[in-house]
Length: 51
Image (cartoon, rainbow, N blue to C red):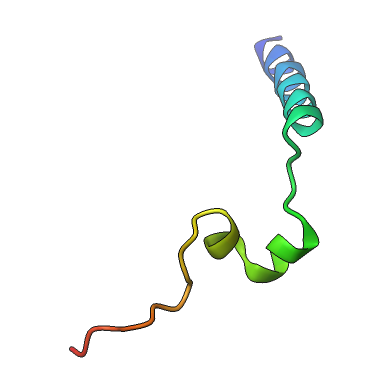
């Protein structure tokens, strides 16, 4: 019974977040990647250390 309540609660929270905030990124953000669009960092550093 507890698992069922947790599942229903999870779906409710997911639905509210999807309606209010939006779950997915835009197509442009998906193309650029989450590193750049969400975290504002590049996935490839400009300068890598020379080991």
